[in-house]
Image (tube, rainbow, N blue to C red; front, side, top):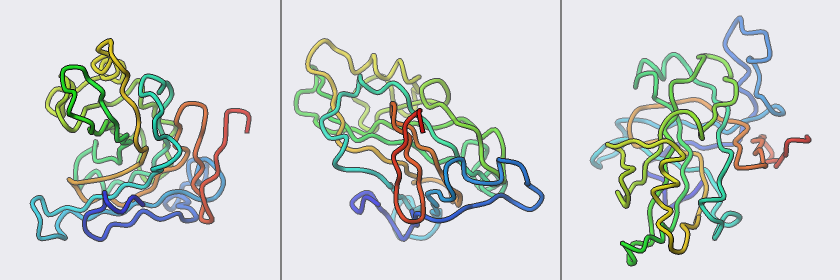
Length: 215
């Protein structure tokens, strides 16, 4: 868990399961890789802040540092979405992929920080594990600091966001990579098989295993 990006008392915990709701006996009733996953739980009304909701990021502050944003080609994850989460915040009440970056825009030389955020479409299933959800072709992306036209109000595709950062100068670089949730609606579920380019991050109770396409 990235402590400085945590608000309230959320949970981002490596765990076994979940193994599906009652009656789910096919492969969607178990995590897509191994036996574990990253369990996430955030509340919507639990702090004295405005908004009152919690926030959590589970990620890596070391291994992606300095990598080029333009080098991101394959992204996404599997999610365990519940019907209750949909009732609490709508069908798009989902966890996110977030990259903290240095935008490196010539027009904003003193702006060295933004967060690239992927907001997925609705999960294709509830109360079981989804198939892989591709962050490069579904949902939308935005930059938290409004550095380009890709804002939370003016949503972009992944290709459009990358193009908006490509101004001909030094390219944008990554600080951190994370899966997170908040600050909006209560959400209790899990993520597994986070893909970043050729690596697939298999969340297990005893740690994170890095797989590739050949595993």
